[in-house]
Image (cartoon, rainbow, N blue to C red; front, side, top):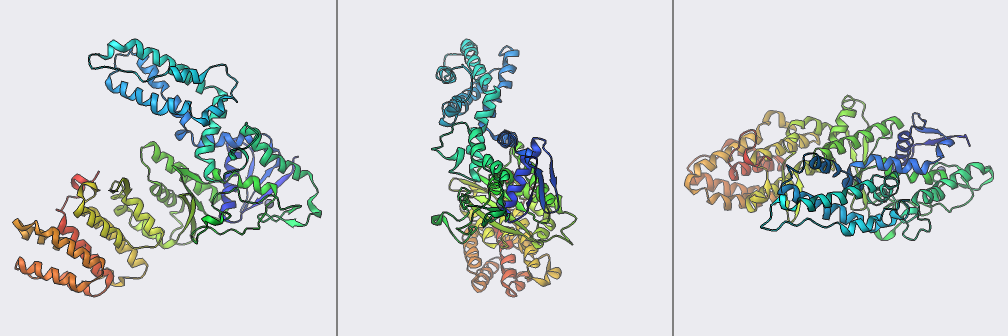
Length: 556
Ligand SMILES: [Zn+2]
């Protein structure tokens, strides 16, 4: 032992493992040296690394672990006890019952918790406590004060359960189970403690046996005579036994292979050191409700560590504020990290997302970062906008960033938003003011990618189009009901890119109100992009009354 080991940056997956490995050791205050494109650590760091491994995940994801959700009720218990239950009302009762059934009972008797109890050296019959714990009933004739003895009794049971969950060994083993099934299994699966048939029930020992001991053995061998080379680091090795099939979605599983999935060669094998590094992939990627995000800045080890730390902090800061906007955290971290570099020195950076058990890739190009930066004000207005589609809520901000990262324009999104606004307004949390923001962002995008080059001299086409719609709506007066059918027709012309039928409908409208067609529509014939920009701005003015800057009633 005591060897210095260097690990060099490679592809994004290996790099995420390096970042994760660094995070794990740093969390335990081990010394790791960050060099330009490699990490250097002393092999003594491997001592008790299984503990360091789990400690890191348990600490990093403490806010979302069910163990901590159980413990967090403690404050509420002591609050009510101190106040002599004076403020305990029907709402508190509802909240307590919800906690009892959806948090405590559900978790305490789950298989993953049950398998941890055997490892915890406590004589408390935790499952017996769970059986005794029932929801607190309040019938119609009763007041809270009538059932106080029962509330106190249930609180006593809860206190015993929470005491158990606070044991050092509970944190160690239940915490480990929590992170295994909510975090680590997003990165790899099927082997070691994530193999359902594993013989070793203690995940710490299992990790050590499976990932660490082979490294220690390997370091003591003389590898110079070995024939094979490690796929990742090039070190010599004597067999092909360590493949990468334990990593999720890396292309080994042929049935899942698709062109969007990262393609990995089938015959790759790695040395025990690299296998250990790959086991740290989930410590490098930031996971949030089954989605993962990793920015592969391979310009240096330091940058790779910094940007991903920022993203983690940003996402969990938002989570604590009750938001789930992954892209917003991403955009803010990137702005903060690269603000000064965007204009001059920034090379394209790879963004890796883990979604629906697949990896997806985008390039954070200078262009898209510039658009995001330029559109900051418009984008920030969209943070609270969204719509419901069947049973799913979509946030407009997140959809817009997704499109920008994929270099797609916003027209189909705008089409959808306007269509929903007409057909199912109750499910729409936005108004025409927000559509205008979206058209501004889109115009900025189109200009950057080379369309609408003459935009500077007609930069107000969005506003002119929107105003025309607004005034036409006003001119319709009592016949305003007719506008819904007209709007559908206009949207259809825009969708099918049919400028002739759009102009037909438009002419009829202006004939009806006996006014000339506004000049801005002459522009629509110049290009598809202009036609759609003016057209959508017009329809949004037509179907929605103009709201003030704060967006009126649909802003929240
Ligand atoms: Zn290797």
